[in-house]
Amino acid sequence: MTDLLSSPSLALLEPIVLVAYIVTVAALSAFGFHRLVLMVLYFRHRDRAMALPEPLADELCPHVLVQLPVFNERFVVQRLLDSVCAMDWPRDRLHLQLLDDSTDDTLEVSQAACAAWRARGIDVELVTRADRTGFKAGALQAGLKRSSAPFVAIFDADFLPPTDFLRRIMPPLVEDEGLGMVQGRWGHINRGHSLLTRAQAILLDGHFVMEHGARFRAGRFFNFNGTAGVWRRQAIDDAGGWEGDTLTEDLDLSYRSQLAGWRFAYLQALEVPAELPEDPRGFKNQQHRWAKGSIQTARKLLPRIWRSDQPLENKIEATFHMANNLAYPFMVVLLLLLPVALVLRAGDGLWIGLAVDLPVFLLATANLMAFYALSEREVDRSSWLKRSVLVPFVLGLGASLTANNARAVWEALRGHRSPFVRTPKGGGQTAARRYRPRLGLQPFVETAWGLYYGAAAVFAAWAGLWVSLPFLVLFSAAFLLLGVGSLLPQIKPARLEAPGAPAGHTPATAPSPAVPTAPRPTARSTPGTRAAAGR
Image (cartoon, rainbow, N blue to C red; front, side, top):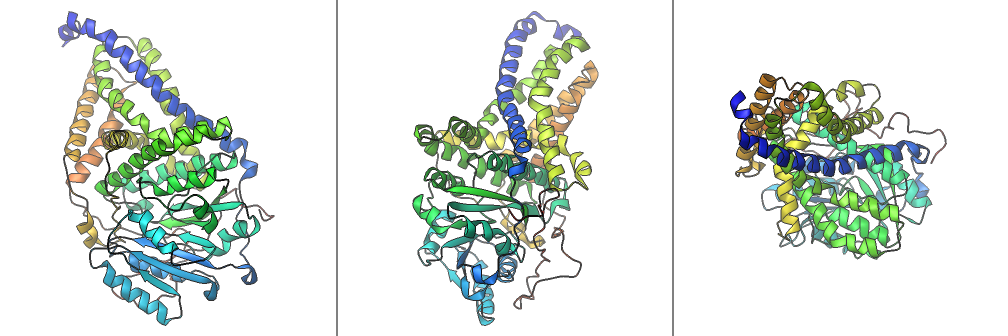
């Protein structure tokens, strides 16, 4: 082994690999530095956070349309409708649309659920289409044509809005006519189901706390997340309505609406529980859709944004926001080169290793760890330290998405069109495995990458490269979790818990013995964000 490491061919290869490695890390450090900027903006402008409003009085409640777009959601559609129908809002000013494009027996469940709630006096309409033109965007736009309500709330199939959701989120829209949309923060009813769901929850908390919070507080553009928010109908119409030419129709409409002059608000204190994907294949499909859609939206809107009269800081932040997934092609290069660079540096001393690895850690890793740890602190100060133990694994999980998301970026850059692939939701039922996505070759690639990093970890231990060893082990574990996890059947059933729900409490629902409903909380404020005086 020593003779191999000292061979002339490796000596010639070493400067090429190390230069490529350092250039790649420098590029990734720019994305890492952006996370540091977001953290600074978040805390610098914390006085601009929106406190949880007092519930809106009946006489001030406007007419609201609630849209529920679903596609093949046999196991959660009843639960969704039960939750939404239990919301506290004057019944004569609430209209529900269940937008069901399903091609399986979900439609039968939807028909029965809607009929049961109509019998109890709820104004709920089942809207179906002959085809899925425009996918989710097409369904939402078709529903808008059937209503003239001035405000539109939207919930995906896996969400359980708290009973006072509308009472809490509507006051800013009623008081401020220039406000086009208010977004709530996602909660996670099955956070504790597995290592994968716990890691996903931390990833999403980072987005909904540091990213959304910083952009809103600093006056930058940010986006509606496709669910758990309320739009002013005029803000949708002024932007040209929903369009289905990208896989992130919510991001697309959000930027078009803000370019049209509408302002958005983020109500971080309002938590809306939802179900995380429990199957690695579903998780990867969701990430693929988000990564590809964001690059599609960047191609569509960034030229228009840079031609607009928006401030320079808004243009720069919009670019980082929509083009953030361009980091994944650089990650492909980094992950291929890292073990090779370790072999080439096996004879270097500890101080030389630190000289290379420490800047990498500080620029591309330490700020991300702080980003997610501080996000958990903002979400729940009583348990954030316990949750933050998983942050290193979360970074490994993000790295293990490289093959998945780099493929998504490549497809978007070359203009490859693909259908909107839904994320399967099981509602805690093992029979939902029938919705698992197709296997494909990707899990085998991820498993091979995990073994590659496992071998690199063994080599690092043999060569005494202790600084690099923890990263190699994390990357190997994360790749194997996604790869092997996608190859194995899901065995453990879900355990759904609605955060903050009183024991034994369930909302009043229409009879649905075959599909149990989960307990739901009322809105609760994030520690440190609720103010004594209104907004």
